[in-house]
View 1 (cartoon, one colour):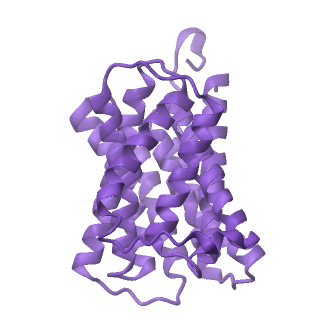
View 2: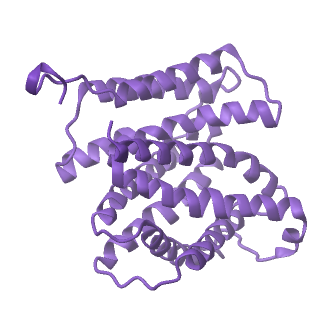
Length: 299
């Protein structure tokens, strides 16, 4: 593996680790804020941080690509997922959103003609998805289909898949990752503004004067939003949208571990087995058999 590939994998792992721990901060914030308020405030904070980090104006072409990325990854994904959580079981949403890597591979192959569909890749994703299902249901939830909520969760997965592909397109322009992420955030916030009143956004920020709320919002805004979207874009630029998206399967595993360590939630044999399957499936999807090349060695 070359150095660029190693840094790409490291960036993807860092992103997934932080995203897998955000549920703790989100749970804390939801005791004093509405879901739409948490969503808007974390992205507004992330956008402000990126502006301070790299204040130079980005003179660019391809504005429609940035707008589409902001709509898909900054607005539609989170809105659809949050609404789905009000219509169906959280475990259903967790599993259905996790089909995003498969959707990314299919979209990349059939729309962009850039990714070859390797049998090992899909075998690994199938194993990982089975592991995600085991971790998500964990014997505590009963499988219960809700067509509306489940469809919204699938649409959220499709929105993230589109965002991952658009991120690859943006990386091809050669702009700094921080600048492209900042511009994407701007479009995401712009698309979010019209729906805030409909979703019950009431800007009462007195809650944020309490340190516990402020610190958790800073973690979501600076870490899970600003930093993670930058590192995700970096990983996509190094590894491609399909390989990077496969790391999404590790989010429930990180959540399982952190819930046990931080909140003291129980870990069952089913969830441990699911975590092992997820990691094994991810490794299988990333594995490429060595090809016999020059001098009888690997290429």
